[in-house]
Length: 163
Image (tube, rainbow, N blue to C red):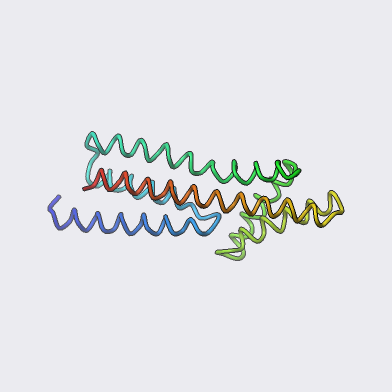
């Protein structure tokens, strides 16, 4: 691949990775997967030298771990605040539905709204339901911070590989 083409590919891959990184702001957007897929495309187009294989392997582990963070942080906060597994399931379904109906913030609104309504119907105590919902919102916030950091780390690994 000539240097101009190589540079053009690197710019396009970096642009896709940045879109993936800032897409993490939208709760249901698969930003880490987009960063990972961009690196995979780069490897397919330019080859996988030894450093590329190692960097891509690390990026794969980080992507999988980052995708589990949401469930761990949000679910742990819900359970810690007295929520049930049903609460987590309803919030997850609400997040998916809300993302489809009202992007970009619908996922978060529907997830937290669904959790609140379920907990309120379960306990008939709006304060308890609100406390759980606030806990889940804090879990969402921390999950975003960790996923954003993981996304930056993945991009950093790709930069080591590409340059």
